[in-house]
Image (cartoon, rainbow, N blue to C red; front, side, top):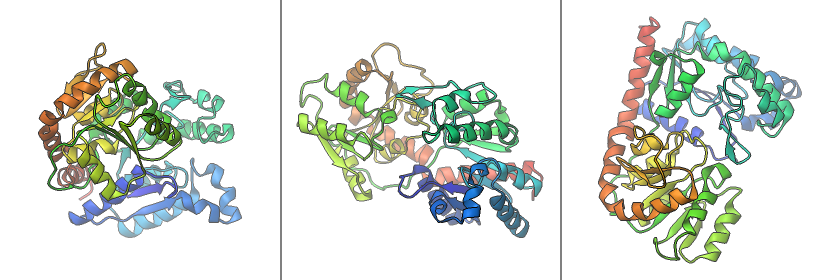
Length: 399
């Protein structure tokens, strides 16, 4: 399991998912060898190591040496890659193939094409680099870490490693939307499988509470400003309480809304017990992203707790709530899926959907929990992952 961990100071769902996946595989009897690097290592690196950092996204020679030694010693059946940047590099794919080890990669973002990985810039969806041999717009707009030099390096890395990515034996797309992204990138259908992440089973679910919960990173692409604009179109108290949990650059927006309206409550950053309590108190969970959000874990947590979800029809959200076959909802009415509703990412559409979701929450609660048990429970997802490994290993001629 190869992964470049994000900084601990930067909350990362990807780090959490990798740790959980290793625990679930180990519990199922799979021997997992973690091959990790962490971005927290960078400040303490020696001067020679820091001097090589600019090329590490392209090659990372020490990581290749260490990985090659591990592969030679342990002869694993599969290398499962998550995030390679900046200290592993996509070159790990080539290193594994040189040793005859097939490679599976979970695609957590759009960084095969987009230097930031988000398809989002200046508050709007942006796909300017799509279809280009070199992502020049990313360099112009400083899309990677706000630096033109680092953006040039990342754009070059993506161009250099286009053949590397296309040599990966199997891509795990977390949703059907990610599968579409990979097809657009040129990956054939037979090398793509859709397998979402799992979250632990919270056990017996409580009856739905009242009102809505918005929980997650308070950043522009998560759509807090969209939600508050839609919320203000209803009289105070008409929809029950709106609870906002999380932290980030838009925290002042949440605090101001809570000060302005008694039906808005800002809960701050919650621990695991606080998350469970907030879910229990609410009837509907909101996922109002304004970018193509790959797989918001909060939705799976909501379904596990028997809470339907109202979200925007972008990225993986329709897939998660079972509305991915419905397409973009027409007009301002919500499109109902198996475990929630999706709407266009517009204030009017979201405002119209809020009372619909509140009225239908109790009826959809059992379906939300059933969808979790069928698709996102760790037992189901881990078995699916082991089947993927077995198929890839057999196709590569491994025993």
